[in-house]
Length: 165
Image (tube, rainbow, N blue to C red; front, top):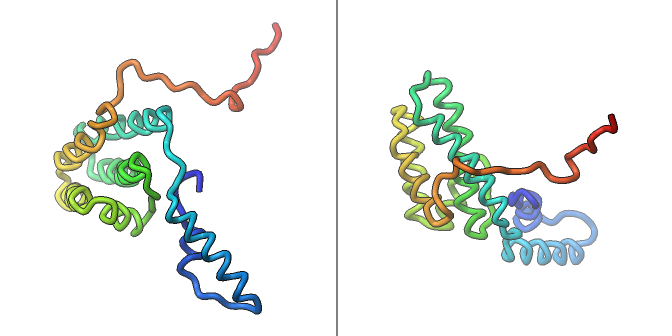
């Protein structure tokens, strides 16, 4: 759930109850439905900035002249990152695979149509401009592309103490 992907929650809500304790299963289903309706924890400023930076870096790579296989790889990473940002920045659950465009479309049909059309054009025609345009639109309310002066420190639990010399 921390990643904003409610896979297990959705399975409980949408699954078929089997087994000897249907009342317990229905109670769990109600609890899962409430969690799904509540949405994920909001992203903090650090998380938003870190994601904007990652997306900006991918967009910069996408804007460069690249072999087709690199452009597809960058586009695939950007597809997930930008779709996730659209949803999570607006307090919605994200998705992966087929669920990502469904979730973006459910959040905002206009944005969803622009998102899917931009990536269709990228993957079909190798034309990056529509993806760059939708990304600029999506990131603008959060400060736009993020490069210069951005710094992210590793979390304290990832750091090692300096050895005594």
